[in-house]
Length: 41
Image (cartoon, rainbow, N blue to C red):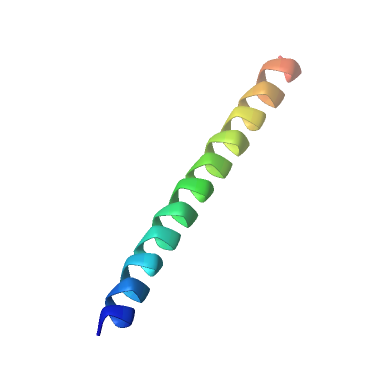
């Protein structure tokens, strides 16, 4: 039972980590596109 609970907690941590990482990637992509637009002007 304890092992099962720990597994759920670990999955939640991993999920949170993945969400944060993908959010950072989206921000970087948006920043890159913005820079491209500015340099094209």
